[in-house]
Length: 249
Ligand code: PGA
Image (tube, rainbow, N blue to C red):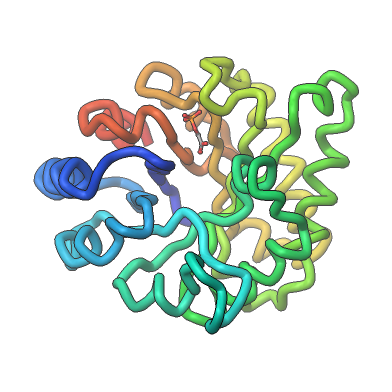
């Protein structure tokens, strides 16, 4: 059976001290979760937070990694460096990275390859913008995002991935996809995985919903058969809210 998961994405929030304080709260409160719990933190938090949470049910993710192996790329952080902190996951393909940092499908393909080669499990984000949904082409957009960056992987490599469907119009806007919209898209994504990798892999692929998922709407979203958990931005910055979402899973 596929893993259920609730993953936080702190984005560019929290100083090191604030992040350590939040991780300490989670360490105390996340005891026997019914799902895999992951927190995505800025690079500078990773080593400290991964060390703090070692042996606990809270796993750690980077929010990005470089598309180059190593060398003269000032300011970049490689997948090997991320892995060396003790982080196990790496969020890739987030719409903010695609939009503000011009991450193309080709760049993301390389990042996914390097993350996997260095023992990181990618949480790969896909999703359409508002105009694309209004034009009714959301399925096509999501299909191209998968084909452009991850459908060249072998079945073994693909099995390391978690997918996150994040409609861009729902991220940080308070506009959540309805449970029916989420289920419809998740079922479509799973059908694409089935067509590419077969029934078994499709059944085993964890697909998260992200986009204004919070402690109030999480249970309703997670009740759908193809919604295996959530990727949580804003509500992951407050321990009680994040805990309530974990408990809704
Ligand atoms: P949000 O962000 O929960 O603040 O909408 C979700 C995300 O970007 O992963």
